[in-house]
Image (cartoon, rainbow, N blue to C red):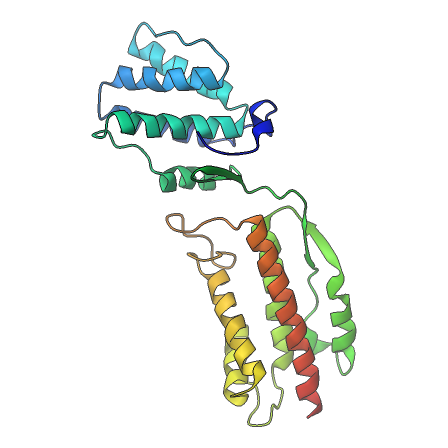
Length: 281
């Protein structure tokens, strides 16, 4: 049994996402191929009948067993957390009783949930909802800072508190990462003492600044920013730039999204202050 908000057992927070029922049914068929097919179908029928609040009856033949199982699954799908828990519990109990039967592991179940945008993730013993309880606030997209002219940078950056509302964790992080990359373009063409920043994009700009600002706080901070930018861009990391690796990538959680947004907001603020300082040298 998975742990989640107990109120969901009595009042459904929503139906299971389209596609999950069919995907789980396909997995049941793969499980059934390892033993007596009808027995496996009846086994899962008993679990989903209970989740649907139905009385379980054994089907007369395999065709009815298939049809009845789909019927029970469709009804149980009205409560997403209970539906996911039912499939997970059934797989765990089946393997415990019959170790020779291979069942989907947590990673495989989570992949189905992710591919179908189910909004849930299993982290034994918990079932985690990836839906935000409230929207994340991140700065709105701003025009490239290096096009604003002398004195314009500070005025633009004062508007960093302006927000747009997003109910998607990854989108919120993606938007504020865009802001960080936009802020970095202000350094293009800037003379920073030992040389001129030639890069036009974030990674090259950061590389130039670190080379010309060795041993400074700016160089150290740029190392942290580059590491965070690389992680968030990677398919096996945050996956906000180049998509998520379906095998090893995981969804961005609300607490992680808030951490990333707050970090990037601080880094962007610091970079803007450093730009103003270097521009006056």
